[in-house]
Length: 133
Image 1: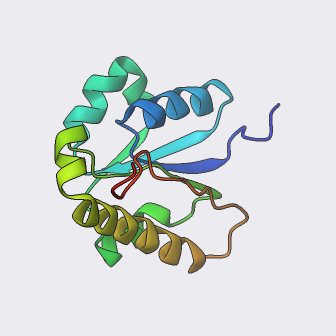
Image 2: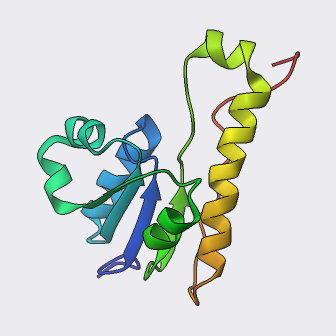
């Protein structure tokens, strides 16, 4: 038995490159995985049949109600959700992208702290922001 066996874990951004691999890795060690994101169909297409083993919630993590629902009863949260629109768009709108990503992360962190739980996974943004990026 592993540390993660039968442990409820939330992965935000589970349809992204890193998130989808994390979901598979957690399932391989028998974690009970919940994914929260904006597009259930995308998640299901990325993970295929593996998605059947995951609880999938669809909504916007910037919403306090949805973030609260997503975090409820989880032992750990891996916050990988991010607005990603490609290098050109991200470079042209770094402030908007950064603000949007931080709002979702902040909401999830706040809601996670509302419950008595042991773990909070924190992520760094997948993009650098600013003129020297």
